[in-house]
Image 1 (cartoon, rainbow, N blue to C red):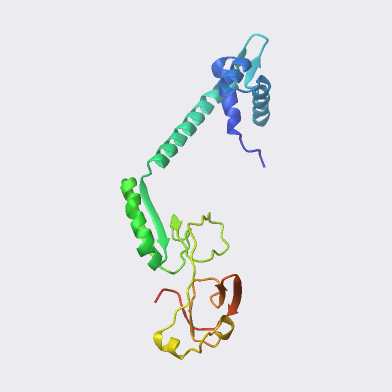
Image 2: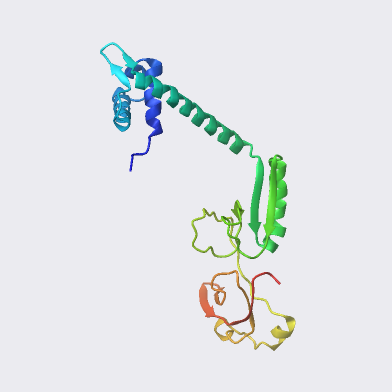
Length: 227
């Protein structure tokens, strides 16, 4: 397979043409003269062509070198323009942001944040998908997914926004029938409702003071959305 073109070598080569010497090019690029000479030589080796005529007094392009310079200069200008366009859009973003978040968290936390975001970036538009079901960001063309719980293995970039804790609750009728001081290890037989979106729906860690106990529960109902 052919070696991939190193765009940095185009910079060294075009600078030599524009300044007329390896020394002047090295001064403009703030590198050693040997670096410029080496990179241009590597470029010639990759292309299989002599791009420069070297004498003790001056450096001039060959016919191939002049033609290559014309094309290389256009490539570098386009690259600089593309970089500038992206940098400006990142400074003042515009366009559509599609995001997904769990229903309750989205309504209580994400929605007010979106309002503040749009006040700061008025040229943006936001499309939200509030759903407890986990969406495939790539297949559904979603830019940002906010998750609550434990992340499954994924190639997506992730950042922790905060922490949460789970609290056991019961209906008044069930709570009235429970024995006093029921503990995690005695709770397996209770009629649990599990959140199917959480990893390990039947595994709960109960903590009190410095003690932590892992309990294997047996949900009789599993839900993929908050009731």
